[in-house]
Amino acid sequence: MTKIFARFLKDESGATAIEYGLIAALISVALITGATTLGNALNNRFDSLGATVANPNGTP
Image (cartoon, rainbow, N blue to C red; front, side, top):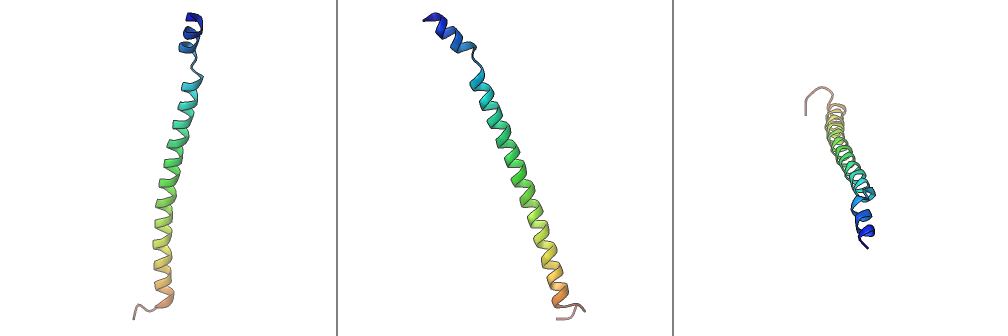
């Protein structure tokens, strides 16, 4: 019984899986943040272009 318990304490495969999960979560958060920032920048650009096309001379 003590050998099984000692082997369980030495087993680090679960810790490795958790580490990979944390890395994947951090990468996901970084991608979501980047996509949100890029999406907001593109939205602002298209709004500006739409206003320019709708009113090319700057008069309402």
